[in-house]
Amino acid sequence: LAALDRLGTGPADRVLPVLLVKIRDEDKEIRSAATSLIGKFGEKARPHLPELLLLCGRAETRAAAEEAISKLGDAIIPD
Image (tube, rainbow, N blue to C red):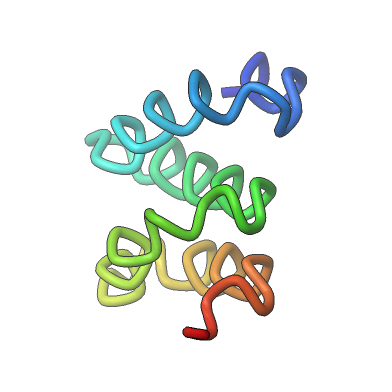
């Protein structure tokens, strides 16, 4: 995940799919880290809001999911 973080938000089409797999990992630290990284993509992560909302229901990923959602900013407000 550190390598994905270093790639930044440019290649969203390549990085986001990997992160979406990692949010289902058995290791809670990997799930939490992947969830946090999704938030760095801002509006590009908007299509994945439903997955982030589901993670809010899990105690171990709630804080990371809430942080990621907050980083989506106005992108989550419907037009």
